[in-house]
Image: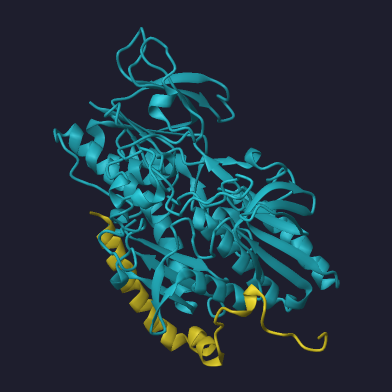
Length: 52
Length: 484
């Protein structure tokens, strides 16, 4: 039991964690620049809708 | 000439005062009463708390800005509201006490035609034995608290570098605390800083929260579209914590903090102790504790304020079970129902009820988050209240502008680490803030507007917002074009 870290039977073992490709795309600047533009647009939709 | 007095110069009060002056011009008087000499952009305090920003990066002196705008600035705290005046005047007034070095302790009655209460919260450390920066835990609720936390975080970092393991405990320091988001940002930033120094194996980092499930954030959780699925924020939040190697304790009401020990009760009624070397725990919030008197001097505090000392506005405060709560319970104009020339915005207004489902432990302790009213909703409330008051002064008889938290969305960027190319921000949007299960029976909110995404872009956006909101708050050119 001490030799291996058993990834089960405790809360922290169950959520999804990002794999290598997700981690790469999260920090890949050209892609993140595109996401930055998209996020800005999505946020603005919320902001404009907030002023009823 | 009308006189509008704004109590408080945080996000809500400062936004309100700025738009009041813009709309009313020199013909009318706008007065701001605040015990602080600085405006602070609270969302960036997190970065002060991990040494990525200095105190002066997140604050500026209010007087310079108010002098330029023509707003009368009084560095003082409000003590009493006399909405009917007294024997000597029929005009409402506020009794204030100056806090600046030259006039400290001096009292003054400031008359008003309209009053906006934007006093924010009292950081109620006393509600938890041993909690707070003067006792056994740290805080990031103000820039000075955050700088203090950073001083001590550096000590822990040095100990880890010297080979001594450290235990970090971050989260809520009271069974009914709110502002989980700020604590969540702080724990991710601490983990990021530890990781970038190659010290992750020397740290045991634990999140402690009064939420029933993580990702509740005091708004009953939310659902977001992610990876082709509709996913609860519980999964989104737990995923980030798991990625950063952080353990968690949920459904926990911290009731006592000793040196290196946090005592908490969980919903199942069991008592536990969590040991730590460094703890940042958010306190409970309450109203600042102003009192109110009628013309004859009778105490009418209960008429103006709810028992938690937040001000009553146009919400439905009738007691009813969770199942009967409605989006329509939430206020939209923030006008006091008894005195029509008084408004309360931001954290200062009394929510009609929690957003998260109330939970009580087997021993009877209420353990659930109270509703958040910070950030974007606070700014929007401040703005629409300014517009409504300005229009009333110009002759309008009804409120044209409304901003119920059950009709407005919120955009939130959770910092997960600072760095132009190494940082991370988790961007989340929900619409509306308060779920409307009648209008959106499936998910409680409009899924078209839901966002949940982590990446470098979120960090850039949070940094951009820091500078944009400073531009706006300082009243630089075209400041009014920047939305709340």
